[in-house]
Image (cartoon, rainbow, N blue to C red; front, side, top):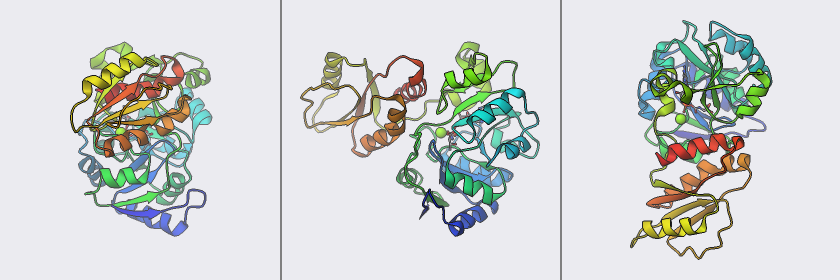
Length: 336
Ligand code: TXA
Ligand code: MG
């Protein structure tokens, strides 16, 4: 992929126009959003969308989110716009929230993986918004990584992960939120959480005035039907991941010792101050103790540990409280 640097505070109109033209003729364009980098294609062009699946090695049953520059454009890709959608769009767009609603027939089945529903969102990133406005077509974009690997929060992650792919990358620096959008299905009677993410469940429930249903509460088979990609092992580094209890120095030392062997290095992702003599074979990445800052730094830290060639990553469990929901979800999936 070819990389073009773009200043997020002042995206160069020519670079944006060129990338938009590429999208319109069916090429792939990776671009930054506030959550993670997306791998974009014209959502009205089934062949272009197929190129996303091929580039990622994404299973054909996993639908792709459509990105649009404003709420009016979102309403054009769906066939119903309930009160709940109006409220959430007004409160959280542009932002890290994806709404799942009945799909308009203009959108090819490749985007929704054959489902009658489509996920749509307005991202809060100046480069993404400039690109979407210039493209004048809805843009299908999953995270710009190979299927089941870590999401990219920097252009370098995209370059390394999708080196063999034809297309361009707009490099706008690191993504601020660092974790993917929250996905909510509004097609049923009760709004259902399909994936925790950048907008907290508490914030959504307070705007909606109802409790969200959890996909987990409807059983595995139904949840898989509602959001086919949501159950896969995901967001996973190459190294295997072992979780240890928060702040438990003894469990941490035991786990590291058990993983130790000659010539291998072990990664550690922690936020507590353990003050242990870890040894030179342990590559330590300390993360912030605030959930939002932790989320923002998480994927880049996992990418770094993978790049350091560690054979395993020991991860300190995060607090079991709602503000950590999205991070806890990603760590659970990384651990497989
Ligand atoms: O923050 C994000 O959402 C990023 C940026 C690029 O926007 N995108 C992203 O896309 O994370 P992806 O494809 O990696 O994850 C999309 C998730 C999957 O779990 C998928 O199953 C679900 O959203 N999804 C998408 N369309 C859906 C639909 N029509 N019905 C149910 N679930 C859907
Ligand atoms: Mg993804």
